[in-house]
Amino acid sequence: MITGYVIGESLRSGAVFEARGLRLRKVSRVEVGGASDTQPPVWTFVEWETDSEDAGALADALASALEPENGWYADFTAGDEHVVVFAGKVFRCRRGDEAGRAEAVAYGRSVGTPEHQLDWEE
Image (tube, rainbow, N blue to C red):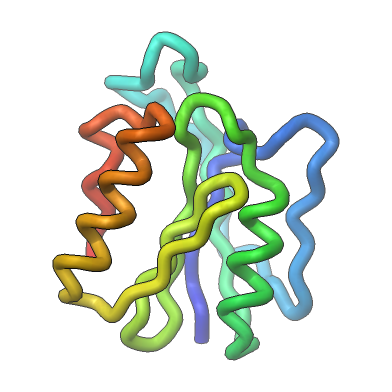
């Protein structure tokens, strides 16, 4: 099973995130302390899951839908793999792979993701 979330505000205007077998787990609105100056102060968290094992197709769907500005990303777990997706860029690494994680963090910094938002759980 693959589980993850996407922040509604991180999707490009007109984009559709639609993947085969996706199920909605929960939608919540949260006031976020520490949003950047270019990010809204309230975010919509869309938590989802799927029985699909095609993490690549799911990552590609997210990479196509995310807003390229402001360093938005989404992440999910697929078995023992952690997948971090930015607009047009996907990082896949095993949990605990510090080098893979460091590469994703460095990319996030390069596209403007605020430092404190690069603290995803493994």
